[in-house]
Length: 222
Image 1 (cartoon, one colour):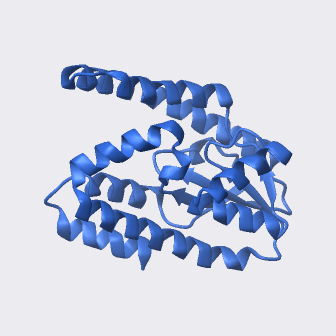
Image 2 (cartoon, helix red, strand yellow):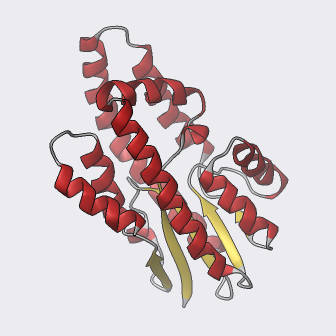
Image 3 (cartoon, rainbow, N blue to C red):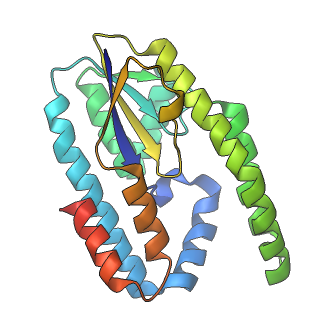
């Protein structure tokens, strides 16, 4: 039986590349400064909790799979170091685990990531509210099967490379669902259920759900 720890990722601006500034502007417009500040504190507390958990991995033969990582070896290490230097809590943690002897594995397909990135950037190039709305509907339709293709690719990478003596750790965005594609001898241990992070991210975008939001914040950070 092989073991895979599944750690949901709440992405930080440092990981979003050229889309980060535009996404931050959209979030400030939708939520306002106070809500954005609270969200930032929740994300920081969530990652602190993950960092504390990761301390127990020391001494294990850890194999790291990372959302959006298309390289391993020296190229993969450079990506990790660059994003850690920018302050990404996700990649700071990966960097720490690598310094303790963990191995980094290629996780994603560059071609699939490029297609998804193009959908995001094309949305921000639209100049009118109607054009943005129409393209958002189109992109949502296109993104769903693309996400499933990414899930299958990620699972295939894990199936092929995770060894019985290793402890796998997959850092993955909350919209993913790759577990159905994993081989039956891989035991998945979620740090926090992906659906909990999905519910939080959905609820934080909508006003008027304070009680539900507070319950989700306690679940994520407590």
